[in-house]
Length: 136
Image 1 (tube, rainbow, N blue to C red):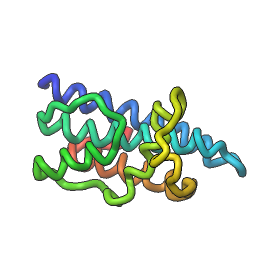
Image 2 (cartoon, rainbow, N blue to C red):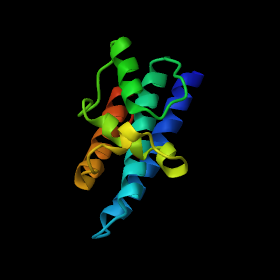
Image 3 (cartoon, rainbow, N blue to C red):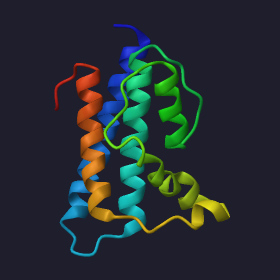
């Protein structure tokens, strides 16, 4: 197995851990929005990077989902479900947790928590299918 494939599998394993955290948060009648956003963003980021890496594409360090979608397009790879909305999760990345958000990101609409739960699961399933990997 090549190093790209091994890394893609590791990323998907870590994405699945984020999905498990989201499943725990989903049982809460009033989950913390920033926590849901963070784990949904992390799931999607890891899945996009896994698909790119699995296709031997080296990726720059970024938490910006829109940039990763652009790379998928440039490489002619299939886009994930709801690709046009995924960048909405970027504001919940590490930057939000540890730094002040930029004014343009702060003006974004509030997170639809139900959508975040669903899209994380959809993108994780999409990434597994793209890489021919079964759910663990």
